[in-house]
Length: 212
Image (cartoon, rainbow, N blue to C red):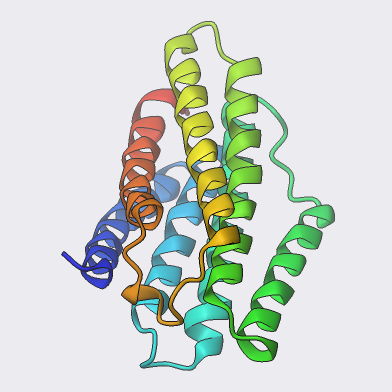
């Protein structure tokens, strides 16, 4: 299958998981972990819809807004992890600084200098930073009751951070084609399947790790 077909398949999966998470949040509106996990999934779903409509809607929506939603979703996953590990999941204004920098980066490399490689570099660097932080939270704040889940989650997110760092290094030396879906880079294809694993992890975390 080509990259766009895989993205379309993931978008369908995200829709299903979004409905599951919204239903879970409706049942537990006071649960911060479920709220932020639902945000993580829903923001990625909306972002993927914009992403697969590339060349059919304005670049601002399909590139800048879609990727900013991905960034906000990644931040939501980090906040969900803080809630799961019994840290206070408060949205601080300081989180706007990396998100705003991320947004400006996509503006610059879409309208000032159109560069797919640098946009991917920015996205995966952002993912690397927050998946590393998530792995750290799970490893050093594991629950006695759910130690196995937390340790496995820490290893899972650490592995993701290594993959994301690999993409960061690869895009530093590789010039990608302007049309994203024309690229069949191994790391990029692998990142698509990572989103499927994140959806699975989100459902398991909601049903098993997060208690009302």
